[in-house]
Amino acid sequence: MASIHRTGTAMYVSAIAGFIALMAWLFSGELDERRNPNQEVTSIAAGEGRVGVVLARNPAGHYVASGRINGVAAEFIVDTGATDVAVSTAVARAAGLERGAAVSVVTANGQATAYVTRIDSITLGAIVERDLRATIVPDMNGIDVLLGMSFLRRLDFQQRGDELLIEQRRPGASR
Image 1: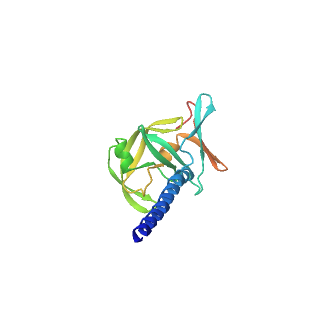
Image 2 (image 1 turned 45 degrees about the horizontal axis):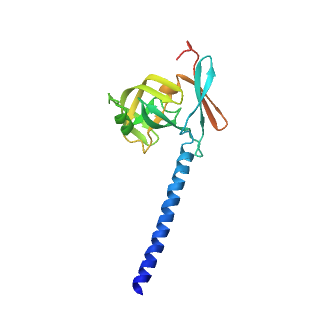
Image 3 (image 1 turned 90 degrees about the horizontal axis):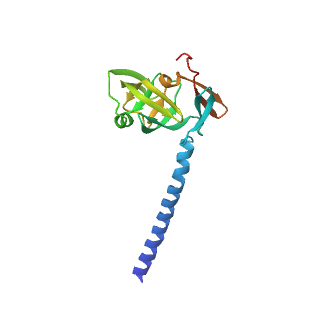
């Protein structure tokens, strides 16, 4: 009788654990979508042969989007307060970025050492920019890429409500 009770208890505990695991799996996609509502970046035709993207703001107020650094998938956070594109060590390694000179940078977490590098290409939806100045920042607390002004200054961007519109400039416009 005790054996049947133990078996029943084990099955009950297994069923609860399975239910919790199933719910975690089902909601993990929803949580990812809330954190990064731009997993599939919406590209637009901006006129005169130009392209652009429209990014939705996440509940925390950030513009997070999926993109590519030298063809390697990465998650971007648009950061107009960052001078350069800042890349985590993991993404830098995967994208084949070389560490250049060490520089001191100020981050949200205080002062840090970063390494100057160049990125061959950054792709955000239909926008592709080439030969960009960047830094490799060793400790970015789980952030892949901060899409800073060395990328954004090449483009036109404006916020409308909970959307950020980023467009290529007309050919011949100053960079």
